[in-house]
Image (cartoon, rainbow, N blue to C red; front, side, top):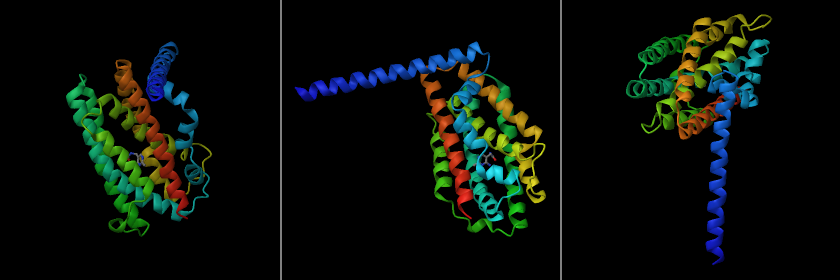
Length: 254
Ligand SMILES: Cc1ncc(CNC=O)c(N)n1
């Protein structure tokens, strides 16, 4: 008898929690509409601390102020090469979802542009590794890298909606854009030999590409169901957390 009541009580609690979450999503949506900003911007404001943690990490600061230990940069380079290799099939999965679910042809063009530049990026990683005397064929992925690639794998599943996947895709690209652009701003003391790496993601073209992705995500999120909204926000938070861990890993290697 008591057990039955407890089960009922638990059900009521979880039902209430679920309702609370739904209301919270609706509130975020209203806030975004009121301020005439997109959903992604509303979420970044809500999770400012985490976003700053991902885009203004001590690893990035150390590049910007020139105090970086080159061993940390080399670790990042080798690990990121592996990440980018895993990022290609993820990008391809987003392309497939866009083809199936989007009614806007330009989505495909934006995503395809991203995939095309990944080919160039992989070549760059190889020549950069060569320059630093790193052998990429012997690199073993570290735990945070494996975890991040695991997230990509889970987002590649066919049951993950396009809206959720494109939100994650935008966030992954935007973190690198914001981080490396910071290393190139006025007053930064980024070492000459690291500037090329920073320009890969910190350049104006990459910034515009990120804005295009953000615009696509916002349009989709505007029309999304409560469930999709929740999943997209969770995906965004997961991306930001994994990015922080990825920077931590690079720094911890020295
Ligand atoms: C860990 C991580 N996050 C984002 C990017 C940027 N996307 C593709 O290059 C990256 N290279 N690595």
